[in-house]
Image (tube, rainbow over all chains, first blue to last red; front, side, top):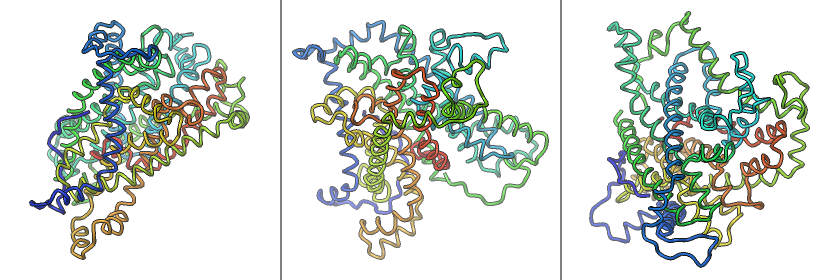
Length: 313
Length: 287
């Protein structure tokens, strides 16, 4: 995937490159980079080129003789496929709700943990744990112990409010997936916002206080603008990872009931490994990559800004 | 993003608010949130020590005599090979990331080779690419090489997956090295290789450890490549859990014991690495 390089983070030029280096010299200086670069290219770019290639072929693994060039026909088929459009819709709903809600919660939690109180370190440690739990294990845990209609914790906790025997996974499949992901990704957002809060200059906050600014005003006029970049970064990185999310869907709903929770990765997975329709799966993959490039370009810009600020501070 | 602290923050700044009713309110809210978020993990841990008859009850069982039956059942059910596969794939890939990533990060920061900027952004862009977009060609290539269901192949895939993070995070540590030290090594006539071995690596050793922990977390928890590229010989713990739910999905206590064993190594690694977690997750941009 090629992304146009935005203004880059700073390099400290301890060894400024002199002009007039011979080609051999230049290659020698590149040597330390090469093993890593070659490995990454081999394992990501070559498959990606193959995906591009397959996307123009009518290829199905169940018909070994297939494979003729069909131009953009696969793209036409995919874009016209109501199941694909449904998957796009589900991906947008899933990603937007998870990212925005976990960011909102993350800001609240980060603001709390930023204060000084008894057991702050333990609270922080407990709060990041959901993000560390193996996603497959987390999905199993929620599917059984929490969402089960009869023995699940959720119905038990909600029973005083008149909720009884709700079959979360089949009645509210999308909400079920969203809740698991919010639980896992709120810690991620909290950590990024917390880092932002703690990088504030205490002098400025002090000055605001001396000038008699209320706490709310300080938050609105000083903290929030300072946090903006961190929030943007959290939202963009969260979006990239949650668009790709497949584990909980695989484990909890298998994309169902029907197609209710089939997102793009799961749709492609099914096309490839269930229907063995390589051409269509590849075309859908290319479309997802293009979408990701758009988001990634913004993400990279924020990342390089943060690097530059970090260097100038 | 190192903050230069010129003066100790006085006890009246936001973070050093004097204790009082407000503070108790904050503490209460924070603890409530922590308990709420941690409870599912705690429940998983607890259920692993129950009998099956205690695991699914209405209302849920909180007090019981703990038993190790479930752990015994799982360990006798060939869990160990999966555990070993996970360990080797994660450890080998983590090691490779550090070994290959450190020189690469050096080339892209201290040595600043021509067009380092493009290489740097190339690395990060590969990490943002959806795995599902390359899984099929990767599967076909792996199959043609006869490497399907092979732990070594999985370790190589994880290395490629984690290298972008490794390079960026290690580079962020390299950028923090004081200029004078590198300059001194050069004036003393140290070759780049020697400079690397005896000056740079010792100085960023804590950073390398942090990078390794973060890469280990990602590799250990990875599911999609594992489920697509392995079958029986090389299957890792997440794949074991998938198989488990189809075969014994009704046995919650056993499931919880297996999940606990699967989750604990990374929870511990994450707790140890929590200071650096955010740096790893943000490619070194946030410290």
